[in-house]
Length: 301
Ligand code: 856
Image (cartoon, rainbow, N blue to C red; front, side):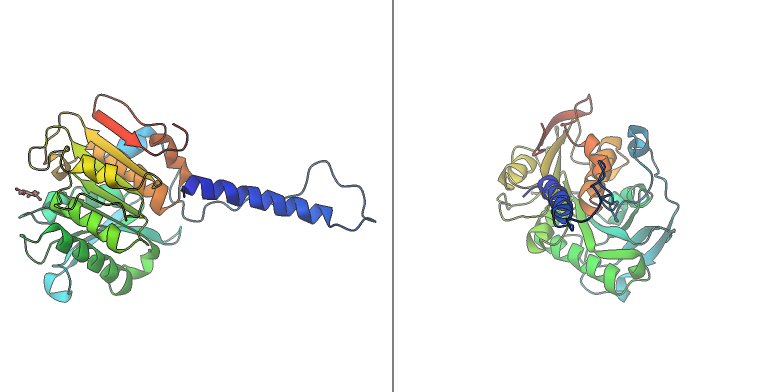
C-alpha cells in the first residue's frame, strides 16, 4: 500500500473521529460553533531542517553542520569498518541513518562524496569498507546490515540515530548489495542501488521503497540487464522509481553528481523521514537534460 494512501486514510479517520465526538456531545450543550475546535494534525515528528528548494537539494552541502568519525576495521565484525558522517546538532532529536557500500575491488573512498553530502542534509551516514574487496553483492548486503546494526547499537553516534529509520545504498556490486539488504530486512525504509550490479534479477519480494539509479552508457552493469530488470521486478504496488542518468557511465556514482544527490536526498527524506515536503521533487516524474529516463509509481502522475 502506498504511504500516501495510508496518510490520507489516517487524516480521514481523524476527521471522522472528531465528527463522531461532536455527534455524541450532550444535547443540552450550547449550539455547536460553525468552526469546529479540532486540533491540527501533529507535524511530522521526523522532519529535519528547513523546507527544501531545488537549490538546497542541488547544493554541495545541506543546512546541517557535520562531523566525522572512523570505525576502525579491527573494532567491528561483519564489515571492515568505515567512516561515519553525522550532523552535530541534537536540537531536533535523532536522525535516520544510511549505510553505503562501494563496488567490486573498490574501497569506501569511491563513495566518500556521499557521506558529507547526505549527512549535511540530516542523516547519519556510514560509508563502509568490505571484508574483502572481492565480496559479491549478497555479502555486501549482509555487511551493510552489520554496519547499520553496529551504528545503532554500539557506535559512538548510536544515541543520535532513530533505529527504526534506516536505509541502504551502494555502488555497482554495492548497489546489488543494497537490494539484497532490502530483501533481507523489510523494516528498512529506503534502498538506493547506484548503477547496481547483481546476478539476481527478480526482486519481487522486496518491500522497501527503492530508487534504482542506472547510467545510460554503463558497459559494466548495462541498464538493460541490471537496473531496468531490477526496477521492473520490484512490485508495482511498491513505492519505487527508476532514474537513468543521461550519457553517464558505470562510474558516475563515484564522484560528486548533482543528479544522484538531489534525487537520493529526496528519496531518503521522503521515505526515511516521511517528509512529504520532498515529494515535489519526485512526483510528477522529473525531466531534464541530465535524465535519460525516469519511471515511478507516484500516485498522481
Ligand atoms: C567498481 C561489478 C562481471 O562483472 C564485472 O565485471 C563487474 C565489474 C565491476 C563491478 C563493480 O562493482 O564495479 C564497481 O569497481 C561487476
